[in-house]
Amino acid sequence: MPSRKVCSMSQHTRSMRRAVAPAAISALALSALVLSGCTAAAPAEESTTLVLAAPLTETGDSPYKALADAFMAKYPEYTVTVEETSNDTYGQNLTTKLQAGNAADIFELAPGRGQDRSVLTLAEAGYLLPLDDTNAKSTIPAGNEDQFESDGKVYAQGLDFAVAGIVANLALMKADGIDEYPTTYKDLLADCATAKAAGHSFFVIAGAMVPNTGFFSMVLAGDTVYQDDPTFNTERFEDKVTFADDKGWNEALGRFLEMNDAGCFQEAPEAGTFDTITNNLVGEVSYAGAIPSGAAFGLGGANPNAQFVVFPFPGADIVSASVNYSLGINAKTASPTLAKKFLDFASSAEGAGVFPGVSGNLPVVGADFSALPPQYDGVKSLLTDGKTYALPNSGWESGEVYNNLGTGVQGLFTGQATVKDVLESMDSAW
View 1 (cartoon, rainbow, N blue to C red):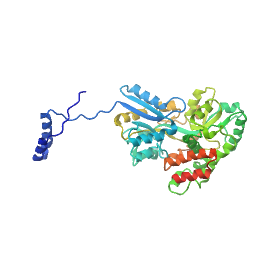
View 2: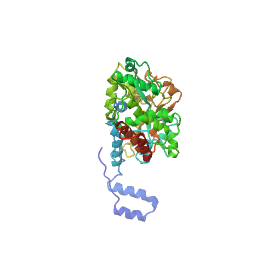
View 3: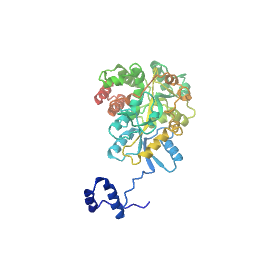
View 4: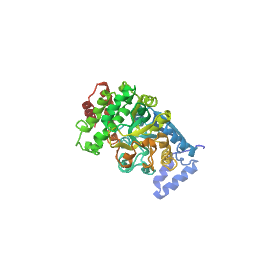
């Protein structure tokens, strides 16, 4: 397309404008431009390409790439490039690029607040584009609106509905003489001894990775904190409670020490990485890990002899279930219309099943808890009965609280921190 000549108004024209009536200004200015061979500048055209930033998928194929491929198959005139970063550095990299003004057009976000990549944290900082003119609201489960909205505007779109619990290989447990998943904490400790005697560990944990130590902590807090006190987060905002003085949080973190003493974790849990989780579960070194429910499908595909099923923590009558992954649009994207088109596709009848179809989690649009695949047998009744809680950190004051939890658990394993130290650091960060 040939470029158009763009001219500024001449001094002669500016002088004439001061001497004529206001109603004649626009016509006079247009005449001056035409006579001088100039035309008005054409509006800037959006790019036909998008960049989507996301954390690296640790098990199985990338659901982000699957979604991008599906979009490009429907709209071949557009290109979507997926840039993946290791999960433990993704949030920090995203915020650094947002501050520098060179972040991707679209990026993965965590609902609520409490992490460096949380929806509300970034929306309130002015980094996200409002999505009220998209289908984003259709991806927000009832009761979760406050995790996606700020000042009455929606800033992110859910991708799937995940259970944050324990993914366990029942086949390996049965091979070691454990006939069923433990239903009490006491049974768990006994099963840890059985696993150790068989050369296995009940749990594998990525102790060197804050996202996993923090995640495991929130799974432990289900029955010790949120089952009996579902409003704990609200009470913490009102300064009615603290982490350090809460019996439930003390019990939850104390279990890390008890389970470690009972041999429930792999050797040197403080050195574990995400690769350790994958290798131990697929390689039948450990029975289970605290990981998002969708991993049951990716792990099962890597080891067809395994039988991975999602469960709550032993003894809990509640499980965390909520939107785990979401997408937001960079407020400074050069292609807001195209970016919104991509999000609308992701929530459409054609696109809504693409991401969960690969992640293994449940669709956020049209999820049917009464017709779940067998991998969800361990939590099916809890989901249908509504015995669930959102990931706690989605309602915390800042990402530093969650970071102090994750790093604090690392200190528990190395003996460099006590439960009291960890909880007091969380209160200080709040």
